[in-house]
Amino acid sequence: MMPVIFVGHGSPMNAVEESDFTSGWKEIAEKIPKPKAILAVSAHWFTEDTRVQTAENPKTVHDFYGFPEELYRIEYPVPGAPKLADRVMGLVGSAITDNSWGIDHGTWSVLKWMYPDADIPVCQMSINRRLTPQEMFETGQKLKPLRNEGILIFGSGNVVHNLRLVNFSMNGGYGWAEEFDAYIRGKILEKDFSGVLNYKQAGDSARYAFPTPEHFDPLLYALGAAEQSDEAAVYNATCTLGSLSMTSYVFSTPEE
Image 1 (cartoon, one colour):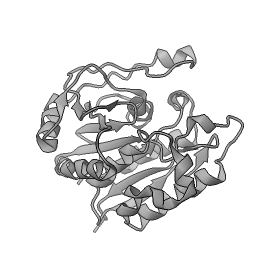
Image 2 (cartoon, rainbow, N blue to C red; image 1 turned 60 degrees about the horizontal axis):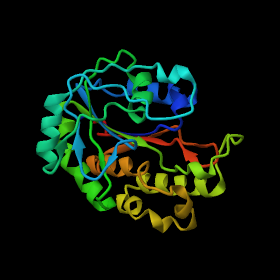
Image 3 (cartoon, rainbow, N blue to C red; image 1 turned 90 degrees about the vertical axis):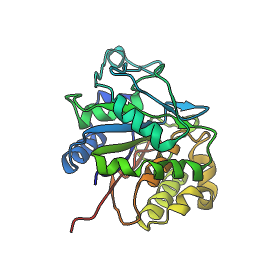
């Protein structure tokens, strides 16, 4: 059974700057089986319904502004996965085809480190902003069969993502950011997924963690696709720039 991944992707600059974060992503790729294809749920495709990409050659989307020119020159020319897209739509049951987007930086800024040859087909599925956290979790549950078919379910966002409070002079996180990140990490390691869905139980820290939920939502899809029996491995367990969490999770079947 393939694992399920949630990565904290952070700044687009992580696509071009080697760091402990990029080393963590490479380590994940080294430790898991090579997938036949990847279903990506990125914070940066946030729509009014569930949309699935069926393009055979999806474009690389540079969905950011004000960054160095080298970022805009990056291409991640992965093949698409139309057969996987059809399978996803069949499992979810209420998704529609949409090829107006592509592979955005929430996906390619991480995968370019994990799979630099860009040889694994990728299908992106959007976050449905109309769904409740419970419904996102349930959508992830519908995707579980893909794990037995060699498909890597890959969520990309940030547990803490408050750009209004970013402090570029900070290496770590504000107290509230560290507190919320630790709350979520604790609930995941305890296998208390309901505690993640009901993240407001974290208290005051939850009010600052994210003004809008799109970077947190991919975690809910990933948790839905995970099994209670899975072991959770934690990577890049840190906050940065005051108000971003880079903490990442890999959910995998325990070895016999």
